[in-house]
Image 1 (tube, rainbow, N blue to C red):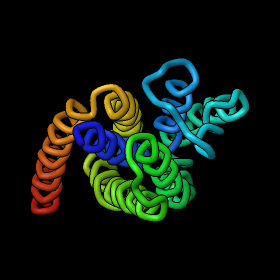
Image 2 (cartoon, rainbow, N blue to C red):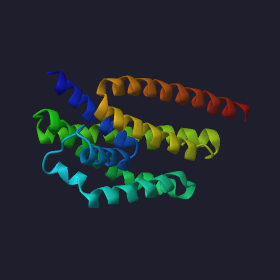
Image 3 (spheres, helix red, strand yellow):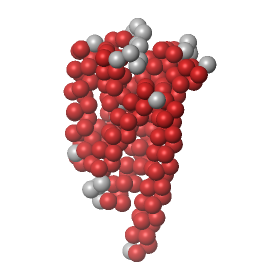
Length: 194
């Protein structure tokens, strides 16, 4: 029972991470599945551990890292990622949940789509626009860098220590809500001064 709960927590954490950056958690799962015993991927998900998949994921991580930090490319990247991030979340949830428990593949895919899609929409439609508006766009590359760090940390913790990932995720969500409230107050003060 405990391994089932940890597996489901890990699946949710990986899907959440995919909502921030689709390729980082996929790459983490691929690398940890290839080089360690921390995650054992069953067919068809074991295709993630192939050298071709790992190579493509490395290229995609680098491309997204640059695209998400470039002001002119950021919005186009978010639009493209609207389909990719929920898909990555579905793959990650299904691949990691199947590892531990016999959750229905359809339910796993739906859960992954909902979790990653919700995170992506909250990030791209609410948090990032607020950060851009409050900083005249100058903080967007910093926010993107922080998202990449969070996606990496959440991915590794989801596989290695899912309970710690849950606490890290709660702390991160609290921090994001605090920042959003602070930015909204700042934006309102600026609007009132005009």
